[in-house]
Image 1 (tube, rainbow, N blue to C red):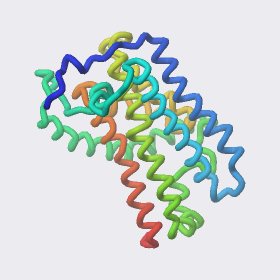
Image 2 (spheres, helix red, strand yellow; image 1 turned 90 degrees about the vertical axis):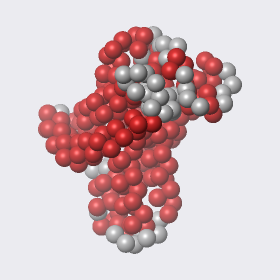
Image 3 (tube, rainbow, N blue to C red; image 1 turned 60 degrees about the vertical axis):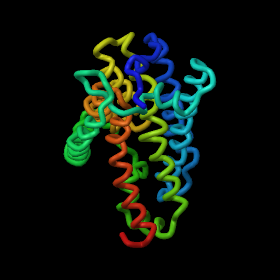
Image 4 (tube, one colour; image 1 turned 90 degrees about the horizontal axis):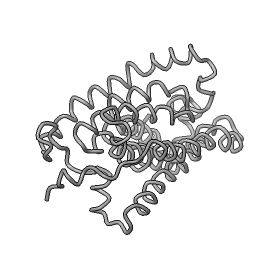
Length: 265
């Protein structure tokens, strides 16, 4: 059964509502990163884990926020209602506007472009960004990649299934149930009325600025959020595009962590 394209344009949000929803997601993440995390830190080698746990709470809150907003606007929700309201549907052909399974093939080149961007461009962009604004540099002990590459991190990960579960939970709510459902599932389809044809650019900008809980990545998040996640979601009217493209890095780190937990890395 195909989703009627006429059902794909939900009630539009005014700008002030978009900003309030953005703030409801961004401010808790900032507090969790810059207030709660330092309060929880006791040992340097566990810093990144404390931050990961704290931010997971904020990402779960984003999922709850999406459900609460949709419930308040639409009453009782069924799974079918959620898939329609959050664009969790088969992509549409940009020319005809009709759902088309053939559009899934566009994910292949988009995944390749996203992977190349993450591996080759993001490190250079973050280096330039933090050289321009040194106070945006990542504090020691805040990065997952640094933790996984350290001798202490590798030793701590062996047999640490609890840490793996924490990371997978964080990743699930980060690239699917939290950030993507909020920005591409909830906000993007409802920003057309206020931002017109530039809604995907406004969405990407808000996504990047939301990352003030990790300001070293704000610029790269603006670029990826705009040109990769929001644009593809808008073109194909399916939030699965943003979810898949956003999830690549999480899957990469998950495989690495599974190997470390098993003592293979």
